[in-house]
Picture 1 (cartoon, rainbow, N blue to C red):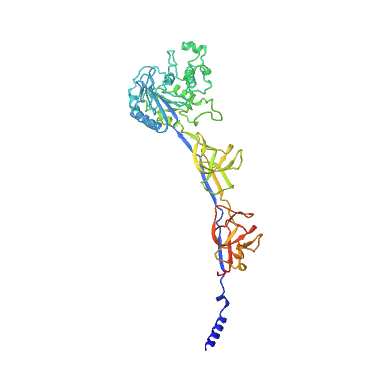
Picture 2 (picture 1 turned 135 degrees about the horizontal axis):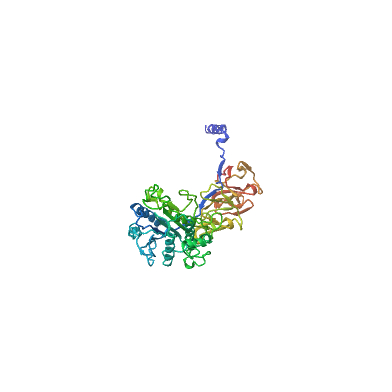
Length: 535
């Protein structure tokens, strides 16, 4: 009976399919990460500085004026608050009809106390203008008054050299001091024109960077001298080249003469803002002369340190005057003062640029650098690798200064390029940086169990790789048996250099070593199949 059972068992086993007892093949499939592309964009910076701005307000204090009112006080407060926020300001307020610094008030951001003037808080500015002593009379010499104040207040520091100098004159009359004839002559008389050119010439000599062009136009003829009863050749103080200006030269970054006066006759024309006065020629004309004289230290198509405009007022074509007869609200009468000053910034300049973070892996041959101007619609300009007008990679640095102007600074840590020649970056320019991480090469394929060597099949990117020590694979062995390795780096330097590469990629198991073009890289798909030995 026992023999019968053994025979039946053998017959049953023979009837089973062979696959039910055969060892299954191991199938390992994996992929490597693709090479990464890293993009970054960074823009240059600037330093906002409070530009030095000196304002001289020459305020009409005649008994006929309508300028000192609640509206103009509010307007003055507005402009003072605006300049206080933006500028390193010094403000001098003086009566139009007066002598020297008598009755003159001053305040500044720095809180200095110039001699000869009354220092006040800026918050008291609108109230003290009511303290100007009212003056009466038929003669008004606002242009010579301005030049007197500019001379006096350079010596005491109320008006600074190399500042933006803004002079504002407010009057409901016109400068008639040129007329010494005793006759009633129009302020648009030829002699008045020569006078205002002489006054503008003196002011421009004190401005600086002026070529003296108005001097010859201010000269009196013999007949003019006879009419005026003078022996002087001109009303100007300084000579044709301004060589006798001496210490009175301000060398202003910008000087403007802004006149707030009527451009129509208030009594004969609709000018409800000022009930009494006269049509203005000299103040407006002097404003125009100062506005249009180029700066000799500037070149190019616009030799002026401010944006030019073609504004006109009542056909005069003047750009730095306000016709008060067209002002519906005096609260904005000083806007022209505020808007005439541009914000000052210091452009930062860079000869080094950070292109990658510390520790980043970067293929320097893949760097793409593009420069563009922030806010511009123009396409960017490629910056090529060049020691003359391009970039050069200098490696990884820590706490490295990238800016060289206006001072050395803006330290960063990471990978840097040096910018050479016209590749240097200056505000408002930006750089777009693109690079790829270095390509990794893999010289080994891990097997997760001990293989039967003859059963191994390998495919990389769908292509069968045969066993070969030239362009194929070899099983790594210890003696005649597959070798087991713990924490084995599968990365190599290149397909022709099997030196272990960093950063390491360690694996544990059994390994196929690859040769030649069988070595794979980033973005590869690997498939390996084999029968395990079972031990």
